Length: 123
Image 1: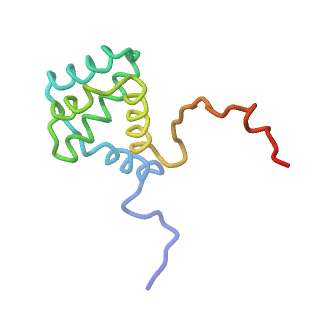
Image 2 (image 1 turned 180 degrees about the vertical axis):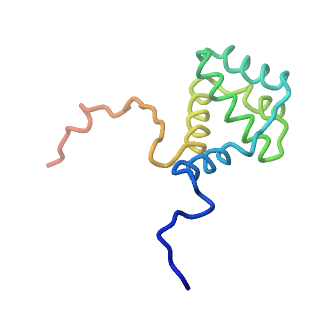
């Protein structure tokens, strides 16, 4: 086996490796019908989500529905009966599922502990 100090023939440009990596980064594209995209965004806008939030949630739901082989309108029908708090909780879980584990979303739940009763000490 001979070694050489010459550059590898495959990567003559010093940035070639980086270029090839990022050229393949977005190779798997997902396409959705415009009516499905509009319906999912409108579903969340109607429930008080800001436009950017509705777009983000819609993107994640459309991707997951396509991966799981579920029609997005069926998914929206199951979400229709949820209250705002339950819907927000579900959306948080869905977004956390699609994010990296080092970055998760959360929400604060008000404590229902009555501190007067918790201070009583039995002697």
